[in-house]
Image (cartoon, rainbow, N blue to C red):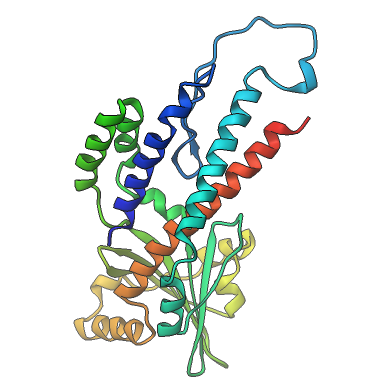
Length: 280
């Protein structure tokens, strides 16, 4: 899978496209984005305190910041329009029967499906992309280099970039008249590992994201250490998951979807940031 490589290549492309723009700015604000929810910090010169209120309640850097945000938004919007709606989402849904539920502005993602009498819910978080091994060090190199060096360095760095990243997620299985099976799982290199297997009184108790329900789940017996189970039992559990499409294909899809959703969340974040800066 080459999505993480694509992400770094896209980052290098952004900087090359903006090289001409940066020369026209009177104040360099730096590229805003290194990773989701992280921003490059620009050192500002110390200013003496003043008893007079700033014009419109804004700081002196706000106009430059707003301009940079506008450029970022335009670039991301153009990229999204060129790439269009990815086909892998519909293809995965049609193949596995999972329906994806998520909202713009929220990091949580839920996938649901029916398997006979079972209601299955798989939940994960976009913030799992932060598990990529030290991407900031690679990205910062070509932001500080000249245009020619940046491309060469990006290619060099991308060779050492991992093709995937670990994801912690949950799978819940509910049947009428039975306790709910709640599994806490993790995937790495396409392999799914079982951390905990719990039984809860209801589907709501297993899937609710409220602090109260989350605390209640932590009080429930987490189950035996999976690695200490008999080989036959471990094999049967693996087959139980695979029959329900909780397998390597699912982990690869989650990685692709996390990267896709993160791009949309980043654009939404930029728009909110600009709205805040522009507010009087």
